[in-house]
Image (cartoon, rainbow, N blue to C red; front, side, top):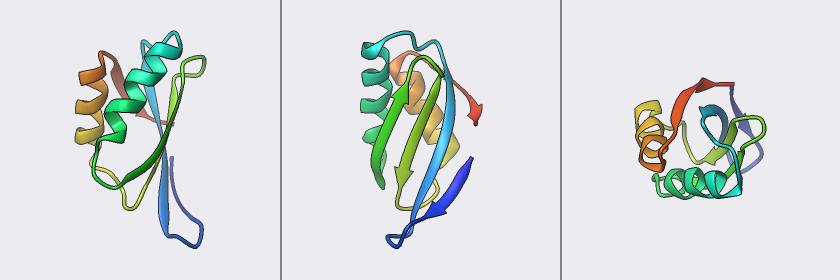
Length: 79
C-alpha cells in the first residue's frame, strides 16, 4: 500500500516482512530501512509482519528488499 499524505507531500508505504518475532527484530529492520535516502520514519511491528515507511518520495522496492535482507529478514511485498 502506498499513499501520498499530508501537506508535507510524503509517501507512506506498508511492506510485509517475514521472520520478525521480537522487538530486536523490529529494531534491526527499522535501522536498516532508516538508512535509505529520503526515509523520515519507519515503524516495524513483529506481530503483524508489517513495516510502515514514510518517505519523501516512493522508494525503490529493490533498495528496501536489500535493506531488509541486510537485517536478516525477507521482504514479501507490500500490504
